[in-house]
Length: 81
Image 1 (cartoon, rainbow, N blue to C red):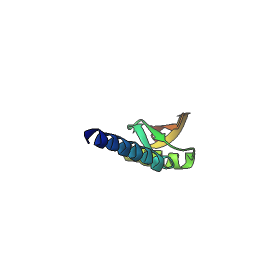
Image 2 (image 1 turned 180 degrees about the vertical axis):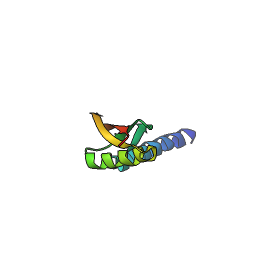
Image 3 (image 1 turned 30 degrees about the vertical axis):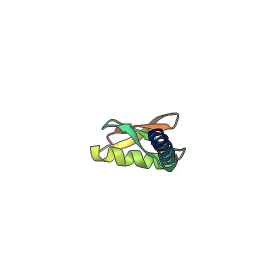
Image 4 (image 1 turned 90 degrees about the vertical axis):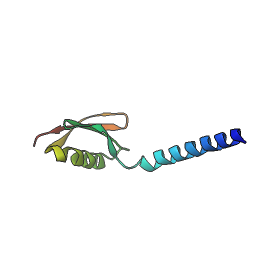
């Protein structure tokens, strides 16, 4: 019975982790960053990614300036306006 519960728990984890990835796929979010930059994970919509970067840079009294894209991450520098 112990092996059955372990296998069930493993499958539950796989299903939940996969569902979370699908749920977040279309919504851009801050992956990494600080006062100087923002790395935004996104699914091809630069307008939404820029809006997320704007919200990230604003508390530092800065605005985002697009720098580059690497795979599914858009990088912005947070610069003074």
